Image 1 (cartoon, rainbow, N blue to C red):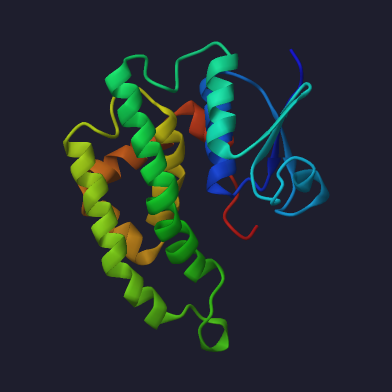
Image 2 (spheres, rainbow, N blue to C red; image 1 turned 180 degrees about the vertical axis):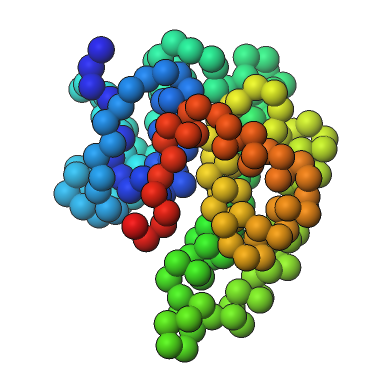
Length: 209
């Protein structure tokens, strides 16, 4: 089999999603650590974004395209459900997670702690406090979707590769940890993920390291 490479930073939730997908399929890969806009990344992604991917002569960018390629190319449990209704549900939730949940919980909330903008290099409490009602509302929507069977089913799917890293990181933050702990379905989902071999095998170092 041709060498499979994932190129990016391991702490990136999108890089982690791709690596989880490969592990679910039982496919070994090389992680090439490279930041956004580096030469290795720019060679594949026209805007220098993470992750990028190489498999033999195939080069791809954008995590959903990469995960769909992994699912279609390699044997193993399907990441996209095989029934039309379930596949459509997973597709729409993958998009919701990537375009709505991720920007809020990662790029706004997590980054407010990772890249603090407050006085003396402290997190900006005013900015974080403004975000918290939005974070709580998003977690309520996810919790309701778990209750309705739209997310977090027995089969591990493409939407899970996106959602788990986001909830994992959110739970490491003071308010996010309390909010997720207060929602039994979300807390149980993260706990189950932490016992999953694909997640343990691809666990990144903490952000910033």
